[in-house]
Length: 417
Image 1 (cartoon, rainbow, N blue to C red):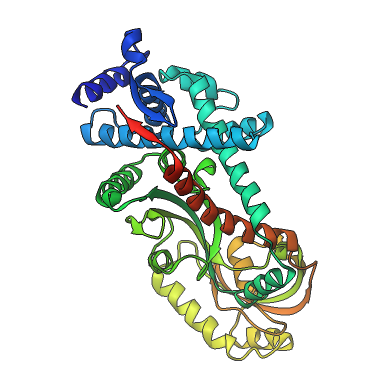
Image 2: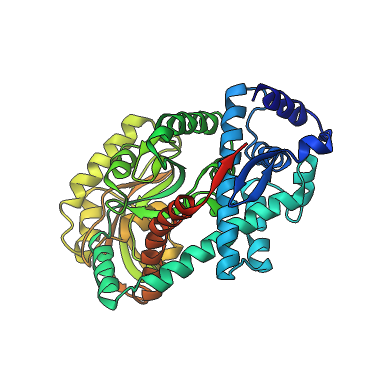
C-alpha cells in the first residue's frame, strides 16, 4: 500500500507520468467474474479522480481514500459492463458527446478541450471516456429495468399534480448530492470517514460535480450529482430535516440514509411555482415607497413597516391608489399586464402565489419597497403530465439502481490479489 501511495504521489506531481515496468502494470489487483483489474487500471483511475476533482496529491489519507474508491468503481463498472453485454445495451456516441460537453461546462474547460485537459493531467483520455460511457450505459440499463418492471398510472400522475398544486408558494430547493454507499456493516465507518474527507475537500474549494462523478454511486453521479429542484417532504426524513436548516451555498455533513452516507449541497432556494407559470400573464398594481441611495437600515426598516401597515388597508385592486395617496407613495398605480417570466426574480416570487385582489408582502428593491396587488391572471396552461411522469420515473430509477448493483455484487465472484 505505501509503495503504491508513494508511486501515485510521484506520478501526480509530474506533468507527464513516467511509465511503470510492463510487469508491474499488468499485475492483477482484482478479478471480477474472472475479468482482470490490473494495477495499471487502478493507477489510471486514480489519475482520473485526482485530475477531475483537483484533490491535493500530497495527503496520504486522501490518496488512500482515492485508491479505495477507484477500486470500488472499477469493480462496479466491470459488473455493469458485463451486465450490459448480457442485455445488449450500450450508450450512444451522442450520449457520450453530450456528457463530455457537460463535464467541460462544470469544470470550466473550454468547449472541445476535454481530451487535451485530461492528457495534460497525465491521464489516458480513452480511460476517462470509458468511465463516462459506462456510467451512461448503466443509467440506460437502470431505466430499461424500471420501464420493464414499473407502471406509472394516470392516477399516480393526478395525485402528484395535486400535491404540486397544494405546495405552490411554499419553499423548494435546488440540490446536488453525493452518495457514498454502504453495502455491508464492515463498510460503515470507512465509508463515513471517506464521506467526511469529501465534505472537507468541497468546503476547501474542490469541484462538487467532479467529486460527485467520481465518488457518488447514485444515479445522479453522471450529471455531477445534480438532483434538480426538490420540494420539502419529497426527500427522506433524514435529508429533509438537514436541508431545512441549510442556507444557500451550504454543504451538509454526511447524512446516513438507506443507501449509505449522503452529502447535500444547497445551490438555490425559491418559492414553488407550477411548471410553465412563467408564461402566465398578470395584471398588477403596485404601491411604491422610495428609498434614498444606499439607504441605512433604519430607513429601510421604517419603509417596510409602513408598507406592512398599508397592506392591511388594501382589500382589492380598487384600493391601491387611495391607500398610496394616504401614505404619500408617488409612483404607485397600475403596472399593466405583464408576463410572469419577465418580472425580476424577487417580484416574480412575490406575485406567483397571489390570488386575484390579494396583496404581496413588502418586497425590498435597491431604491424602493414595493407592494404588488394582483388584479387579474391569465393562465397560459397547466402542468405537463409527461414531466410529472418523468419525475416519478426518476425517483423509482434511483431506488432501482441501488438494488440492481447490490444484486450484481451479491451474485458475482470477486477476488482480491
